[in-house]
Structure formats: structure tokens, C-alpha cells
Length: 494
Ligand code: NDP
Ligand code: HEM
Image 1 (cartoon, rainbow, N blue to C red):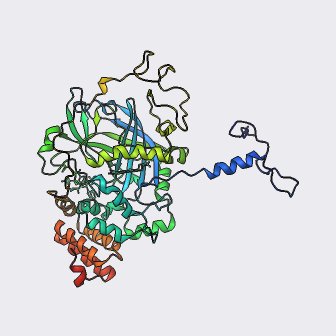
Image 2: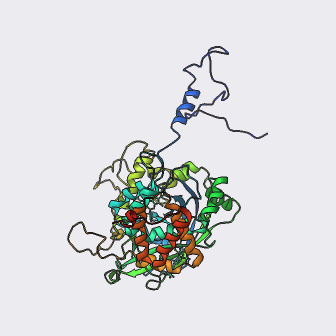
Image 3: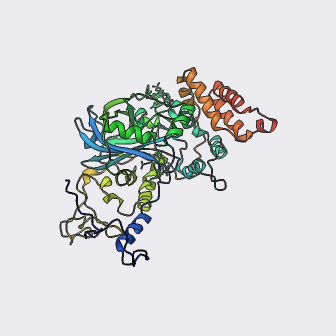
């Protein structure tokens, strides 16, 4: 017979009966002194925490980053030195859906990686696309509101989405990717990841380079058409969780090739596009991807809630040798994520095991709710302020980043002026074969169902500027699918 451990209260006392409540008489009411019953109900009432305001539905696993290339001349980061092996956690997600959303919905996928490096946690919180819908963080909450539910109907609103996109032509690049085949990957293993933003590398000599990160799937790209996704969702809303979890349990470990594009610091002043604009890629011909290693996912979490729901990723987590860039969106994200974690998980979210760095941590923050550190973080109770005379932790100038060259007057610059929103979506459109284009047209037309004509026409105007065939194809699909025709009022869209 298996020797089972004794069940206890949370205070550790043995529980004599977990089947029958304590009652006054066999048929009588329960007694207030049945603390085990009260504790059970009270804990259940507290089982949910706020879901992430975006990227609520996710799937994750642990793995390793192995560095095989040599980029030591660009960065001093230990995690990126030749031969380095670093444990990591990845959480994939959809953006708009709530916690219970179906996995196989058309949406951008989050691709958030936490590298537990010897110099602290490095979080690369990217997506499965290299660009984003907006380039100024002032527009992020507006954009997200268009993806969430309408306040009155409590339904998703195609009108809101296309109204916003058609008024924000910088979204065209990401919109084209979203409605292309890559908009519904079959499972997380069959898609790329991108750091998306431009970050920087800096080396021991204090030289800075701009860098973009790419994670290329080794499983190949596999996607669902809209019709296939409907079938899948009809059978299971959890198709990603099933695919990822079971692949790892079977020992089929998904892998991605890690690549970087590197731009010398002063090139940023010469490129015809702003290299810090999140709606743009760096063409491979200009900055060829350099393969530096591989990531593999090889271990499922034991407790989804503790390890995936409580995982806290933040672009603010960088390590020496890696820096930020002037990308406005990245700058806003440096603030936003830690703020979200303090709200969603609590002040001490970094002491939750999945978020704990795997290196010594010494700081002077104190107290607060749920301080579970179990000791003062300076290592010495007399050293609770800085500077002190009690050998408390001190700063290390070796971690100092080289100065960032910045110039210009503080102002609110109109990012729509002088920005070419059409060439890069055109380059992508031209990569698509006939079949890919037809599916793009149909996917867009399907998503425009019920949208007022003047908004459709405004968006078609943008597609035309990308490529006349793009506009013609979507117009044709709109007619075939919904009988849509431009009317005098819709064609007169501003
Ligand atoms: P390249 O021909 O060198 O690269 C094309 C890239 O497009 C490849 O990385 C390929 O990814 C990717 N791609 C193919 N189909 C799709 C799709 N449906 N959705 C998203 N990406 C796709 O050309 P350029 O570097 O000059 O870029 C041309 C266009 O390709 C860009 O405007 C951009 O839209 C897109 N792109 C460019 C990237 C870059 O970093 N330069 C990265 C991703 C996309 P894969 O190798 O995985 O098949
Ligand atoms: C999640 C804000 C842009 C990728 C989140 C969360 C917030 C947020 C508040 C929830 C965090 C949490 O509760 O744990 C923002 C803001 C943005 C922005 C303010 C722009 C100004 C982006 C971009 C990307 C991205 C450009 C990708 C390139 C992600 C991912 C997650 C996420 C992957 C989920 C992380 C996880 O798995 O826990 N974002 N976001 N976001 N965001 Fe953003």
C-alpha cells in the first residue's frame, strides 16, 4: 500500500475528515467552528487573479538557449557568449481574447521569453510578427480598445477595428501579416518569434550597435485557413495547449533558430526609414540575419497557474551588454509591464518562484504586502539604507551602459509626416503567391462583415496605395462574400 502524506490545514495541523462538514446533529446546520470548511470556501473565492489586460490566453513551457555563434564583438552579455547555455521560459499568447478564448483564433501571437541569465533576468517580450499596428504608444490603449468588446453590445466590433486601422495607415504592415496565412498558426511550434523592437548591444569597449532579434521555427510554418480554424474551434478551444503540452510530453521538443540583425550605431541616421519605427522591418538585404544559436522547449510546467499565469515578463528586464533604443513604443513598454505586474500579481511579483532570478539578488526595497523574501535583501539587517558603513550592497560601474546619442528639441512630432507606410507592406504583398493573395483578400473581406461602406472605402484606399491588385482583390472578395458594392455615399469617404 502506498504511504500517503497526511492532509493538513495551511497552518500544518492534520485534518481528520475532508468528506463531512461539522454539523449540529446529523441533519443539523453546520457550525461556525468548522474552520476547515470556511477556509476551503474562502480560498476558493480567491482563486482568480485579474487576467492580463491583453494577451490573457497563453501557453508556456521551459527550455534552453544555446549560443553557437560568436557575437562577442557586439555585446558583453554573458547569455550571448559562445557556448553559453541559459534556462528559459516562454509564454505564447493571443492578444485580444480573454482567458477562455479559443486558441485557433485569427490574432497576433505573443512570444515572450524569460532568460534566467547569470547577470539577472532578460525578458524579450515579442510577438510572432516583426512589426506592430501603431508606432506611438499614445495610441496603444485606443488600439486595444478596438480589439476588445464594445461597451454597449459587449461584442467584438469589426467597425471599431477597421475604423481605427483605416484612420491609422501605419497599421497596414501588421494588418497585412495578420490577415495573411500567418494570422492563424496551427500551434505555437509552427510560427516564428520576433523581438520586434530595435534594441541595442554594447561591448566591453563601450561601442553601441542596434539589434533586432528573430526566432525562426524549425518545425516549419503551418497555418489554418478560416474554415479549418472554425472546424478546430468547434472541436476544441484548447488546441494550442493540447499541441504544445503533448508534444513536450512525447519528447518532441520544438526548436527555433536564433538570429540577430545588427546595425552600426551611426547607420541609424542614414537608413531611408526610421530604424526605431516599430511598423518597419530592416530589409534582410541591408542587414542580413546572423545565426547565433538555438532555443528548445523541453519541460512542461507542473502547475499552470503558478508558473504560466503568474509569469511576469517585462521589456524593462535587460542585462549588461543589452540596451534599449529610442523606439517610442519600447520606451512606453519599459514602464507599462512592471506596473501591470504590481497590479495583477502584487508588489513582490519578482519573488514568485517562476519570476525569481537565478542569480544573487540584493536591493534595498522593503516591506509591503506579501513580502516573502524571508530575510533582508541586503544580506545584513544593519544595512537597510545606502550608503551605509555595514558592507551593504553597492553599485557596480562595470554595468554602466555607454551614453546614448540623442539630439533635437522636445516636442510632439507628427509621426504621420514623411513616413512611408506603403512600401514595406508592398514588399510583403509581392512575396505572396497567387494562393496566398486570394486567401489574404478573403480573410480581410470576411473580417469586414457589417462594416459601414465609408470605412471600407477608406481602407480600400490604403490597400490601393500598397498595390492596385490588393485593393481590387479585397473589393472582389467583398462582393463575392457579402454582395458589397461602393455606393455614392461610401465612395465619398474622406
Ligand atoms: P526577404 O525576402 O529577405 O524576407 C522576407 C521575410 O518575409 C522572411 O523573413 C519570411 O519569413 C517572411 N515572410 C514570408 N511570408 C510571410 C508572411 N505571410 N507574414 C510575415 N512574414 C512573412 O525580404 P525583406 O527583408 O526585404 O522583407 C520583405 C518583407 O518581408 C518586409 O516588408 C516584411 O513585410 C517581411 N518580413 C521581413 C522581415 C525582416 O526582418 N526583414 C521579417 C519578417 C517579414 P520566413 O523566413 O520565416 O519564411
Ligand atoms: C502583455 C502593454 C506593445 C507583446 C502586455 C500587458 C500589458 C502590455 C499591460 C499585460 C502584462 C501583464 O499583465 O502581465 C503594452 C503596451 C504596449 C505594448 C503599453 C505599447 C505601448 C506590445 C508589443 C509587443 C507586445 C509591441 C510585441 C512586440 C506583449 C506580450 C505580452 C504582452 C507577448 C504577454 C506577455 C506574457 O506572456 O505574459 N502588454 N504592450 N506588447 N505584450 Fe504588450
